[in-house]
Amino acid sequence: MSGIHKSPFHGYSAEFDEHRLYNRGDSTKFIDWKLYAKTDKLYTKKYEDETNLRCHFILDNSSSMHYPNVDDFNLDKCSKYTFSSISILALINILLKQNDAFGLSLFSNQIDFNISEKSSYNQLQIISNTLEEHFKNRNSARTTDTLKSLHYIAEHLKRRSLVFIFSDMFQNESQSKNVFEALRHLKYNKHQVILFHTTDFNKEIDFDFSEIPRRFVDVESQRKIDLYPEQVKEDYQSLAKSFKSELLQKCRQYQIKYVDADINKGFEKVILTYLLEKQNF
Image (cartoon, rainbow, N blue to C red; front, side, top):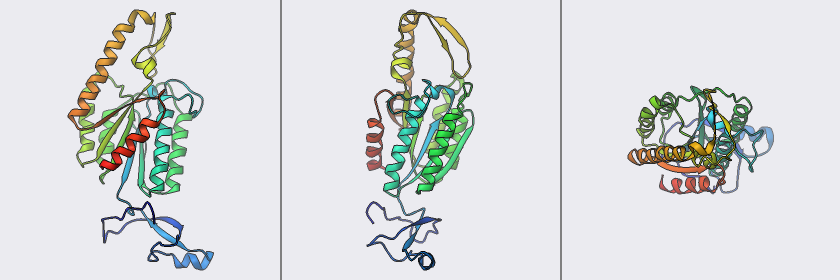
């Protein structure tokens, strides 16, 4: 059948996952004859390990990822969270058509959700519902513990996978020194790790605000500060540039693919990155 990769794990007892309609040219080995007797239709048993490619998506669900505030999943106006969610669902649809396995982890100051890799429409539905549920139930005081979360995920990813991380990488200073140790943990089992550094570039990097006085609120700590944006813009841009430069340098050091994902630039870069990384996997 077109799109299915022959698994190298001959003799491996794969977990039975679901049925699919028999297509002309498919092997008759896995036809479920009992189901045929009940339905008068030919179905084959589908197994988890009928694929060479496994992808695991890791999505930062902290409050900062829900900036800017949006009311729904809208392609024209995204928060960092909805941009990441739509990107993940688009990639999952590609994976599903190729019968490749996919899983998802959501994290904030804890693991909010984790599901191992499978290839099924039921898995897609679970992930889609989960992403929507966490969007609807977002709150404005959810902090980030990237270090603990990534270590947990690394320990539970047993099979070599393509790992896609969507995060703004905002964390407190004490954590930032150790986050890349957790990312290196992900590389331990030869996972191929891609970081989509997800930002609203105009606001969070370029600090493009009008000259009128504004109140800025930290969405995680709820601390407030009143200021004229123009008074701090140059210093802010310098710090933001240094932050991105250090992040890129660390990614190169640990052989992690860094991708600048601006939520205002559409989804093309995410899709193209996936297609290129899949070829190199």
